[in-house]
Amino acid sequence: MAFGKLFGKNNPDNTAPAASDDAAPECASGEALLDSVHASAEGFSGYTIAKVKCERIAEREGPILLGELTRAAKARASRIAIDLSDVMMISSAGIGSLVQLHRACAEHKGKMILFGLTDEMMSMLKIARLDRLFTITPSRADAAGALG
Image (cartoon, rainbow, N blue to C red; front, side, top):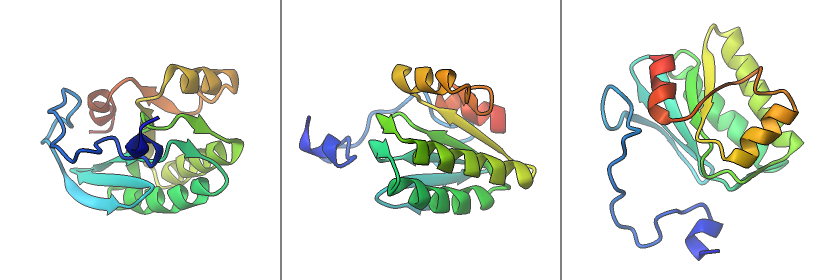
């Protein structure tokens, strides 16, 4: 495993990332709402797009992410799409944090969408029947479309 990947940095040579077809519909980037070791988030008109930078969400990371993503979601009417493409493992505590965030968004008449899940992560959510609770889309563009 590459050193940069181990610490959640997918671009160790610091070159500009390639343009993506998954850009949010309104513009390539929104207003920066969050940039921490654990996650980043951008605010668009009426919703937030967040990216979890951790490879694992466990007992330590879950509460931190819950706090950061809750604040980012509240900045845009509790409507948030979360990119989990870098997450390789999630514990029951991590799942609990996502469930809490989902409930918080619903309580404020908002919505939470997950996207970018690995096949293993999607299988795990299906086994736990959490695919029925969470709205899951395949891409950032689909998630933004469902929120916007």
